[in-house]
Image (cartoon, rainbow, N blue to C red):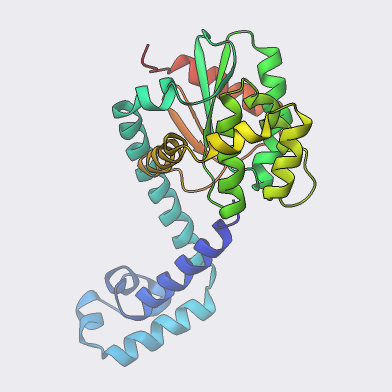
Amino acid sequence: MADRPLARGILAWAIVALLLLGMAGVWFAKSPALHLGSPAVAADISQGEFEQRVRNYLLADPEVVGEALNRLEAKRGELDAAAARAALRDHAAEVFQDPDSPVSGNSNGDVTLVEFFDYNCPYCRAMVPLMTQAEAADPWLRIAYKEFPILGPDSVFAAKAALAANRQGKYVALHRALYQVRGHVDAAKVLEVAAAVGLDINRMKVDMRDAAIEAELDRTGKLAQTLRITGTPGFVIGDLVTIGATTDFDALQALIAKGRSGRQEAR
């Protein structure tokens, strides 16, 4: 996910700002490195002196910002994970059994791996061979696809084309072929690939304009937001909601195995 470094930098600056404003005054007042003495003495120093001492402390020990940031991210991750699990309990049927979501693998499998993805996401592209391998290796795995085009109009066009292809029984063929495209996936490339996999292009274009397909994308976007899926790829299996790709097939299999043990799919 490309937004992580930017978010981390913003958080780091926010932490520094809070420290300099004295928001962390109590914690720092107890730190011998700041030489503030007792809490009572610390309370009597001026705002300017306090800020200067905080500044000196950060310059002397800048790693404290990274430590604070790591703790903040860990805490936020725990809270987000708990909220996602609660949301998943309330929306299990929509996540796992939406009849409008294309599927592959065993339609009657004992566990469903749900993927939220964008055709212009390089991390999603990296997952395709692993997903294909997992499906081939596990006869009881069901995969549900959630079109989540967050990377611009070309991604939206590709998502609509894929959902239209599902009406011709060629969703998986187009889905996998689009990830074989070199470079950015735009409308021209989508139409070229669609023709190559045998789709009726005129029918596909008509179906792409169907309000039902627009509504499906809207529902998926809202569902992703509810589940705290803020980037691609996002995965849901059992009672787990995760974001990010892996290049390790064993790790993917471990995720599937863990999902099986905690599955809460509505049947």
